Amino acid sequence: MRTHCLQDTALRYFLAVADTGSLTEASARQHVAASALSRQIAALEAQLGVALFERHPRGMGLTAAGEVLRAHARRAELDAQRTLEDIGALQGLRAGQVRLATSDAFANELVPRLCVDFQRQHQGVWFNVTVLPTAQVPEAVRQGAADIGLCFSRAPQKDIAVLYRQAAPVLALLPPGHALATRPSVTLAELGRYPLALPPAETAIRQMMDIVCSRQGLQLAPVLVSNHARTVIQFVLRGGGLSVSSEVASRHLVAEGTIVARPISDPGMDLRDIEVQTLAGRSLPVAVEAFLALLRERLPAP
Image (tube, rainbow, N blue to C red; front, side, top):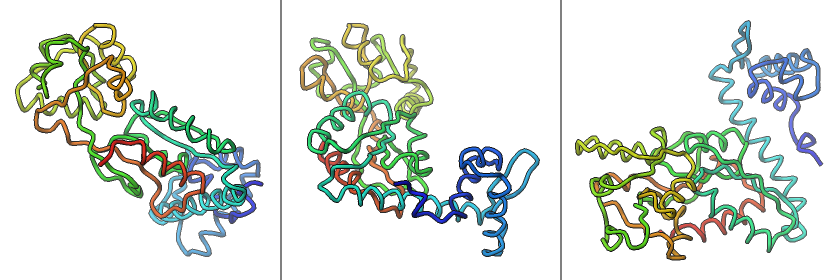
C-alpha cells in the first residue's frame, strides 16, 4: 500500500513542486502532466487566498505562505507513511522501516551494531542509513528524508525536536604506552608536540579546536587531515601519532585496550552535545519509536 491513498492530491503535488522548484521536474517525479500540477496549485492558492509560489523564468520559489504550507504538507506526508507502517506492524513489530541520517563518527561502529541488535529482535524491520556532514543531518530530518537524526550539535535547529541530548566533549586519542597516556587529562598544547591527525577545518570538532587555539595563540600543524573518523583512528592505531575523537567513536577500541582516550582540559573543548533529532510535531512510526528506545539505551549515560 502506498501513502498516496492517505494524502491529499493537491498537497502532494504542491510538495513535489516545492521540493524541486520546477513544474517540469515535479511532473516527471509524479508521473502526471505539468498542466495538472499547475491546476492543483492554482486551486490551492485560490482556496487559501494567497500566492504559494513566486514564478520565475528558471523555476518556482516558495513565498512565506508557501513555506508554512510546505511544513504542514511534509508532516502530512510523514504521518501518512507512519499510519501505513503502524497498520503493517500490528502483528508484533514485524514490519516497518527506520531511516537514519547520521554523521561519520556514529556510522562507523555504533549504528551498525544497533541495527544488528535491533534486527535480531525485529527481523521484519529494515534500515536506510545515510551518512552526511554534521551540518546536513538536521536538514535531512526537516525534509522528511530521515526519521531520526543522530549527530553532534552546538546550537538549536529550526523545526527540530531533540529527544535526547548528552554532552560530548572532545577526547584525545593516544596509543597505549604513550608518554601522555598516564595523564588524567591533556591539553592542546601538549598534543601539538606530537604528529597529529585531525578532521578538516569545516567540521564542528575542528572549529572548536581552532577557536581554543586562537585564544591561546597556539598553532597546530596536523600531518594528516581527513573527514573520515576511521582514517584518523587508524593513524593512531598504526603508530602515526595522536588524534581527537568522541567517546562514541572510540569506545570499542578503549574497551579492547588498543587505544587510550583522555579528556582535553582546555576550556571550550566540551561545548558540543550529542543529539537525537526528529521533526518537531511529527508522530513517529512504531518501528522508529522502538529503535529510538534502543538508541537512547546505548548512547553515553547522562
